Each structure stands twice: as structure tokens, then as C-alpha cells.
Length: 120
Image 1: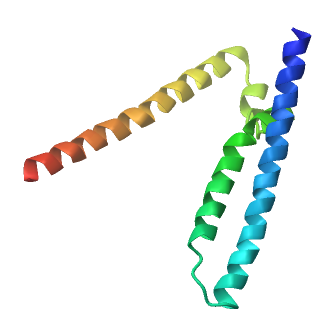
Image 2 (image 1 turned 180 degrees about the horizontal axis):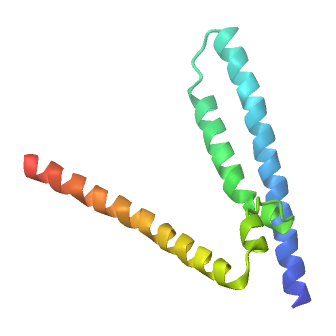
Image 3 (image 1 turned 90 degrees about the vertical axis):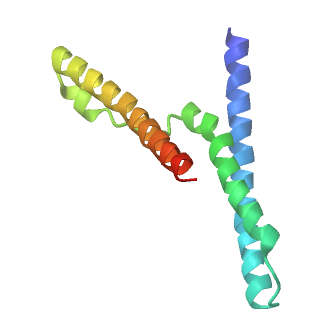
């Protein structure tokens, strides 16, 4: 089990290093893009795409490292100070609201879909 934990820790650290490299590369490409666009007056198509995809990729690839270092923002102050019964009701209400949001999106999406199919 220790070997497995060490392997996951090393993989998470490697993901963090790779993600920081992607962010650094995106910064350099943005600098290149500014120079090419405003000094040389050339198009900057690939620079924009590379920067967008690098930052999105760094966000997802770097997430294991963030979880490893407990860097995620925790918002548990209120449940920490509540008693057992109010904490249960808070968790129940938040869970119901969390399930209700995608259900409302699904209902409004299906209403839009019916509206678009009936008008054509």
C-alpha cells in the first residue's frame, strides 16, 4: 500500500510540474503574440489557441497536485460550528438544491427544444 501511495504522490507531483510548465509556456507565447501582433503586424491565430488550450489543460492536469497539497479552497466554516442536527439539515438542504439546479436546467433546455421544434 505504501508503494501505491508513493506512486500516486509522484504522479501528482509530476502533473504539478507539467501544469506549471504549461502555464509558463502560455506566458511566453502571449509575450510572443504581443510582439508579433503589434511590432510585426502579423496574424496571431496559433498563439491564441495554444494559450487557451494550455491554460485549460494546466487547470485539469494540475488538479491532482492541488489536491495533494490541500490547496483547494475549503468552505466548511459554518458546518464546523453547527451542532449535529443543524449540520444534517444543512447538508440535506444543500444536497437537494444541488440536485435541483441541473433538473431546472434540463427542464428549461427541454422547453427550448420543444419550442424550436414546434416553430419549424
